[in-house]
Image (cartoon, rainbow, N blue to C red):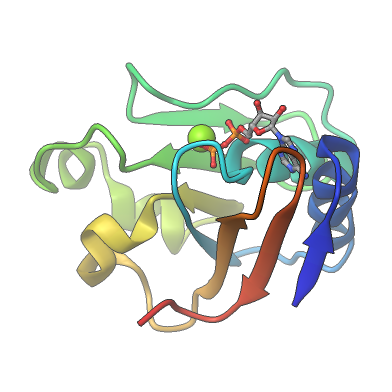
Length: 138
Ligand SMILES: Nc1ncnc2c1ncn2[C@@H]1O[C@H](COP(=O)(O)OP(=O)(O)O)[C@@H](O)[C@H]1O
Ligand SMILES: [Mg+2]
């Protein structure tokens, strides 16, 4: 468990996960809106020495950041009404592919998430405090 008291600390947490990330890793991120998932991805992408600007893939299904140590595939299931669209763009090819996948709101379609994925939950605990825990929420 990690308690973050600022955006910068959440970004730093993302950076430290990136340091040990390997090809094929999948990070399944859960937690309410504003819990810090996208900020974590921002830190993660920066930690792979990518200069890409990270925003939530809200109107497209995936953002790819290809200029770092490993390619990153960034998904967000929040506005996904069913899993067909994401399967159609080859979701499995991404998660079993060459890069690292990070999936916000992964619990909305947890059937799609590979067994080996690392689950991280983000919890809001006040204005600037967030609790980050490893493991799949119940
Ligand atoms: N400790 C913190 N960690 C991450 N974000 C924080 C923190 N404290 C405040 N915030 C704010 O909370 C929001 C988190 O947004 P975001 O990362 O997009 O959340 P999510 O992707 O989970 O919906 C941002 O507006 C950020 O400035
Ligand atoms: Mg987000």
